[in-house]
Image 1 (cartoon, rainbow, N blue to C red):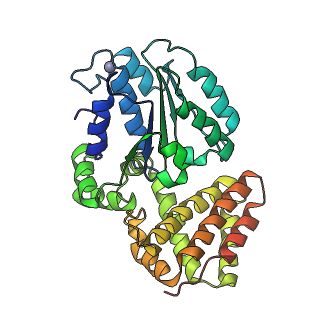
Image 2: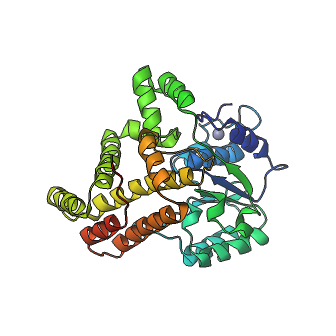
Length: 334
Ligand SMILES: [Zn+2]
């Protein structure tokens, strides 16, 4: 395996055997938690499909022009369709524009490839529009979607894709890899693997950006505090936050998005699902919350967080959004 991807051996092997004209399919869906490495895997696959000098079948050289252009996301036959900055949804207009490109013959390679990360954020209109491309795929076009889970997409879409499900690595395996490849001490590696919940991408992001790691830890510590408090105490915390950070939307969006990952974990516990938890450092608190709540009420809390993020995008007063959210959280005694 030369894709240099940590973990995900099965998915890598599968895609390596698919990176030839005789085996390649029209559509792939890579699912898994944010930071697990979905996009990194997609990009490696795209290189393997387009590499001019593959050192072996299913491999890529990383040095030829297509390999370098794909790495830089500047390859003429690759379009990456993202949710626009500051928006929360992928819109139908974006899908339609992409479909016009997709209908053209490839420019320098065998295929036109479209990568759409986080397709769970597509509107229903956008999903239905994409379905057309899946039902009648243009010749020499390849679609690669990523999403948090297959269930977040229309089944009509998922069923038309080759689905690859990525799971976080075990903490032990990620610890070993981080130690070997990033020169960390065993303690440092284990701590990082745990904070990242076994998600390679998240671990590497934390490694590059210590500030992000600190913000993430602080956000979860703050939630733990808030859950112990009554409403009066919570309002005081929000006042304190506002004094320290002002009304910057990003601060509030980061908090709510981080807490969202916590409540997803609580839901996983409530439903006794075998999906691995993301916030392993908070496992005790997550299990305690799950023991006190039923799945319906956790789903409501998750929905409140999602609504909070949408309202932030609509420039509603951040403090008001946060206070409203805190009203809905249960109180968990220590
Ligand atoms: Zn190459």
